[in-house]
Every structure is written in structure tokens, then in C-alpha cells.
Image (cartoon, rainbow, N blue to C red):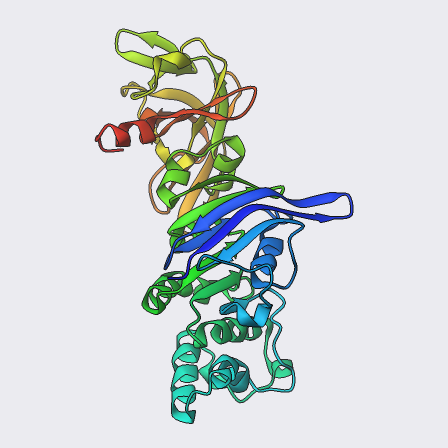
Length: 372
């Protein structure tokens, strides 16, 4: 079994603490995505696991064994980093084959292994080329292929799809989970793309300033982000955040937008009268007719078509901006007065002062066995 455990890891560069008392565990065969903005410490953490740099404090255990005295080449790790790190004097084929060659595999087994992963990554036509003749996207795919070719028990992948084109990136989001599952490897995958994190991760660890701020399944992160900043990171367009004070009526807890009540089923009574920020995802808001139940009057300020969806900026009666997202081709007003309806079952409530999540209606209803 190949598990990964990090215990109280600290890494400092002069006066800057890059990793601050960080702990996490990755189960055998699990894909854990490290997600967060640039400078969060994701790549430093990956290089530390690989043995390229050493922690100032803490333990790294692979398969239960402490790596403190184990050199990088003896850790049984496959790696693909942002800077490619290809051997310049070797062809793409030989670069990919290097881990297979190191295990003294037969020529036929090496050729078959290289061709299989190269075809998947669509670089089988450039296997004879040296790195200087490859595009950045081809270099990145070659580095990824080399990491995969040896079927290592632990894979460290540092944003391996960053430089590939949009079409291949989309295809790889579908293909990589199947490939990784087939190999049975334990994977730590770094990305700044939330869609990639949601598509590839069994769990996601959200990092910021050298700490893990939340860890959970993609559904847990999306339905119950730990704070406002994490809620902002997951979603495009970004989540709407509005100051509110929840109230309680005969039909339960609600908030008001342009004097129209938005019911918040599943919210705890403790939120009543508390200064909060409500989070409403743009896709949970729809245009509706005047006079329809829950219709909120707004003024349409701008509309932006974004291929698969159309994003509309509207203004409430009290001049609060709200983004509304709908599938491309769906009818909706492009200007002037309009009405929207909000699905309170998808709302989040955050503490106004700390930004921490107080409650998520969707998560609460899911725990209660209701459809979210």
C-alpha cells in the first residue's frame, strides 16, 4: 500500500514561512488535488515530498516509512513539474522511456509502454523529436508521459496541463482519471483551475499562505465552502455576496432582496438577527415574469455572452449588483427593467466579520436526506 502522510510540515526561506505547520494524509490509490492561488505553497510542498528540498520541521511518510533519510531517487515517485525537466540530449521517446529503462524492462515492453501513454497524450507523432523541437505544450505532455510510463505507486503532478491547448485540456480532464484509476497510483495533483480540481480530485485540499484552509470531496467544497474566499475560488462567474440580516417568519427563515423575501430552508435558527453575508451562485438565479412568486425587480446593466453561457449584470432597487448566469441560447432580457428569482436552497450564509461559513442550505438539506 502506498499512502502519503505529512505531519506538521514547516518550511521557511529566511524570514518567510512558506509552509506553516501543514498536515494531511493521502490514502492508497487516492487522487488528492492541491488547489489554491499562486504563492500558496503547492509546488514547494510537492518538491518536498519528492525529496528535492527538505522540510525545516515535520515528517514525510510514504507507505508508513519516514523519508527523512531517503534520497529522491529511492522514494518510488513519478514526477511531472511545470518546468518540464526533460533531458535535452534525449528524444521524446527516450525521455518517456527513462523510468522503464531504469527498471530494465524489455525493449518490447518499453516500446509498448511509451506508445500507449504517448497516444493518450497525443504526442505519438513527435516521439523522435528532441525537446528543443517541441512546443511548450508538447514538452509538458512529454514530462507527464514520462511520469506515467513507469506506473509508479506515487505520482506528483504539478499543473501538468497548464500549457496544453483548451481542447486537449478538456479531453484530459476526462481521460486522466481513468488512466490514474487503471494504474492504481496514489496521486497528488496541483492546479489553479477549479474545474480541473473538481474533475480530477477524489478530495481537494484548498491551500492559502502555506496552510490548508479546507479539505474535502469536490461536492463538500462546492456545497459548503469554509469561508467567503473559498466560495469565490469555486465558480465562474464568481459567487454573488450581499450583506443581509436573516429574519424568521411563519414559514421559516428568510432574507430580503429589494423587499422580496427569499426563503432559506434548512438554515439554523441561530442565524436570525445576525449580520451575515449571503452567497448566491449566478447559476442559481433565473429571470422570471413580473408577478411570479418571489419575483425580484431589477434593472439589467450589461450582458456578456461566454460561449456556453450568458452572464448578465443586474442592479437591485438598492443598487446592489447581482450576476445571473444562464445557458447560451436561453431567452433573457439584455437591457431595461426585469425580474429575477432566487433559489434559496442553494444559498450560503457567512459571518460578516470573519468570513467563515455559518450555514449552507444545500449542505443542510443534503444531510437531512432531501434533494439539494
